[in-house]
Image (cartoon, rainbow, N blue to C red):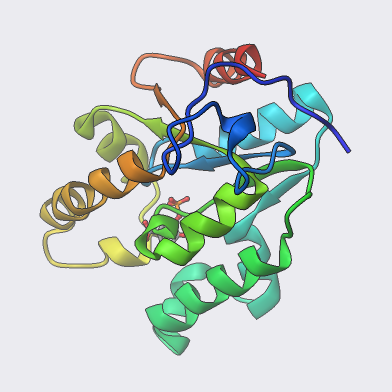
Length: 191
Ligand code: S3P
């Protein structure tokens, strides 16, 4: 499977080069980040440009349940969705080659982060809060934003999650003023 040349990405567990860390796979790139960060679009473009397979956890869970994510939350509850995320990551094994696109809440479970790290490098797509909000609120389908004050909920969730993305990631990319193609270029330059 594909092998990524090592650059100076650091492992958070051992602070050595990623290639020195026994837990780090080197075959996959996992994209993490909050709603509106552009993970899905960048994942598609990255897959198109590299020819690597793409595993989008939201898409795969939607297919598995046969209904939309808001419907999964409404009918089965958030816990069922979170369990499906973890189960799916367990099936995407170490040694897997490709691009793993994750939902914004994947970092809520440490186990998920460990599973992602075993697959390869974790890249955090980030942006300024207002930009994330503008992008995420264009589509009103996100179940976690179906509240009387979605903007306040958005800010609260972001505040809670930023430290989790920070801990999980090997590399952070600010996508605030970059196009999908530019973000993809930046990731490809890391490979
Ligand atoms: C979620 C984000 C969504 C999706 C689900 C939960 C979250 O994915 O996984 O609605 O907890 O932030 P996106 O990050 O692609 O919007």
